[in-house]
Structure formats: structure tokens, C-alpha cells
Image (cartoon, rainbow over all chains, first blue to last red):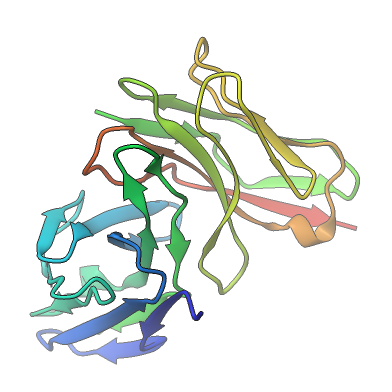
Length: 116
Length: 113
């Protein structure tokens, strides 16, 4: 049981390049999330998904895209990297039901991205 | 909308000192409340949670009580250790389906021996 796995751990991009941050979970969680963490700013929600085939924008979705074709995977796509996207990105998952409410989030170890 | 406000850091304490990190929230209905901890170079880990008013969450000597009347969920520990040095995040999840967890900005705790 690996939990939430993110790859890569580190990446340096040039302005205008594109890349996909991978995230997979093996806990059969229905909810998955992408957050970015900037110094002194806490975590800001980029996108989230409540189940396969369903995605919703969070607080800061501009410049990003996501897909959720399976329960396990929730990749985050940057199409035209900009210096403002330099950050640490965290993927998380949780189980949520209408009867039980939300369970705690399980986080991956993060991807540190630098755009120069 | 829903929001979480926690005290600014950094908080610097000596070993065995008493810790309080304040957290207040704004939400409709009856949200669940959480404290997460982030150690250097790692992702966030759940520290404790409370799902209804007057619940007390506790773990590893940390405690927090869900106070609906003051919309607060303050984190406390009676005697901190150097190993408690980390960033602490207060978070809220609405009981409405389809909503995501909302975090405060985090409070850095530094404990010296």
C-alpha cells in the first residue's frame, strides 16, 4: 500500500515548456486534489476531482489542466510554463461519502518545480 | 464563502514550553476541522481532527477542541519537544458534498533545546 505517489520529485522548466505532474493513489479514494504551496501562503487549491470523469476548478486554476480518467490517477498539466508557476505541488486524496462526510486527506511528498 | 484564519508565525519556543496556535474559521453548516503538520521536505500529515461541536481531537500530546460558539479550533500542547518543529496547518471541510478541504496559511513552529 503505497498511498499517494507523485512524480517527478524535482523539475526545472524553461518558460513556455510544458509538462505533466503525475499522481496516483492505491487507496480507492474517490476525491483527489492538486494544491500548490508557496512560502508564507499556505496551500492553494488548483483543481480537484470527486470521482472519475469529474473535475472542478479550485482557487487558482489558470495555467493548469487536469483529467481523471481512472479512480487511481489524477495528472496535472502545465501547457506554457511561466515563472509564476514556480512552486511546490502536492497531490492528495480522500474518501468522501454523503453519509460519512469527508475523511482526512492523504498527501504525496510533493513535486518541486522551478520555471526559469 | 468558507475560510480559515490562523495566527501568523513563526512561533519560537524553548523545549517543554506550552504551545498554543490559534485557528478560527468561517463556514456555513457544520464543517469538520483538522490540524495537519508538515515536517521539512515532506508532505502534510493529519495530526488530529474533530467532526462536531465540542469534540476534542488529540494525538501525540496535541489537542484541539471544536468550539462552535467562538468558531475556533486552537491547537495546544503542554510541553513541546525539538522534534515538534514543523509547519502546522488548520483546515476545514464543509459537510456539503463536492467541496474541497480549505487550509489556513500555516504557522511555523521552531523549538530549541
